[in-house]
Amino acid sequence: MKSAASALLLFLPSIARAGDGSAYEFSFLSSFLQMIAALAIVIGLILVTWHFSGKLMRGLPGGAHLSSKHIRLIETRYLGPKRALLLIEVGGEYLLLSNSDNRLSLLKQINMLEEIEVIEEEHDQGRFNALLTRLRHSA
Image 1 (cartoon, rainbow, N blue to C red):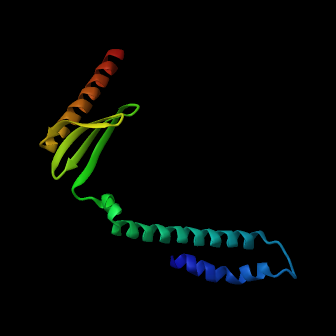
Image 2: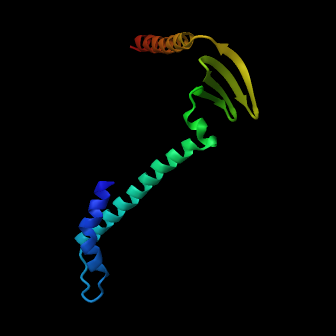
Image 3: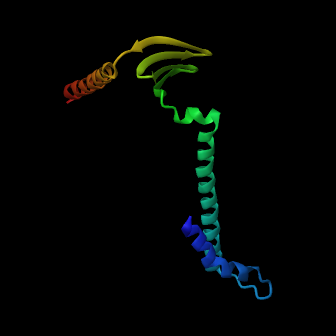
């Protein structure tokens, strides 16, 4: 933000001189520098707006879901159009949900995260072993 303000003050004389219509000379360098200064100001305004809108959204009752501490979406796997599996954490418990069309249904309640990690490791390891086997047979 300070760099945008200092750039504006640095290029202010050239901006004022560009507005003077009596002696018009085109300078690519001054036009380029004015464009860079304007871009810095616009980006600075966007960042300031983004920062304050984030603070404002957290303060509103509807914005509480953005920083929820009790409900977290861990993973989503899409199975097809309008069909997905959702793994969510609610108060320390993990739930596997099915989402199809306009229905959301509970498939399984998982008690420990380690069960999920073991399943993922076995799946990845099995795929890696199959790849190694295919490479050995092709060589």
